[in-house]
Length: 250
Image 1 (cartoon, rainbow, N blue to C red):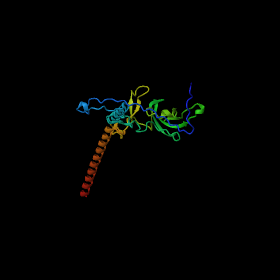
Image 2 (image 1 turned 60 degrees about the vertical axis):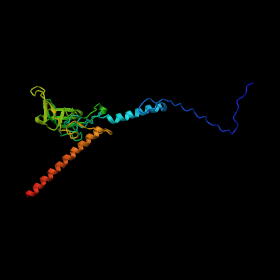
Image 3 (image 1 turned 90 degrees about the vertical axis):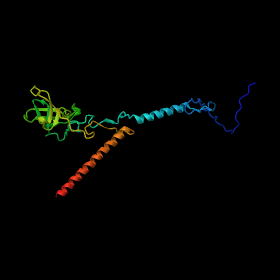
Image 4 (image 1 turned 120 degrees about the horizontal axis):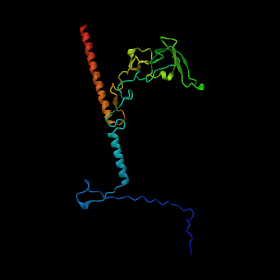
């Protein structure tokens, strides 16, 4: 005889069966410094391997973040972004290109670093705006040689902005550096002279690391501020003493 399963009476409350908890792995403590001297008094220590592994990873990662900075590698200095680590600014200072204002470009003077149709000094006498619809993607300017107005040349505005090819204004020979033999047919090639020393890094090419959490970088910044403050105090004392001597002389 097969009996049918009993059904729960109406109105009965169903209770969820609690899930079984994962078993905890028990490891006996190894013989270490914290083990008691008496072997009979030893008791196994409950250890959860998952928690122990997480603890080790967190501690190691935090220590690595403090000891070694990702930006400077732990040395406390990084490359100066203003000068690219060279210590001196490029020609034109912080401006990497010549400024070409197409609205007022007519009448401006330019110096070609290579002889262009036998001349170097030019004056802008016209312009042609960009017309992408007719296949002219960029604007261009019309230049005429200052010593021979019949010699003209059209130059792309993008090329005119390049400091290695053109310089704004009429530059003299001593204003530029020269490469090559001037007696050659093409003549010597002009190169812009290097700019002034970088003020961001004082000409060193490196600045203290400003990344948050970098201990070595913060120490360098503190020392740098101390030197600046000490120098300012010295200058103030010298100026005050000089003014005092001038007052006594009068």
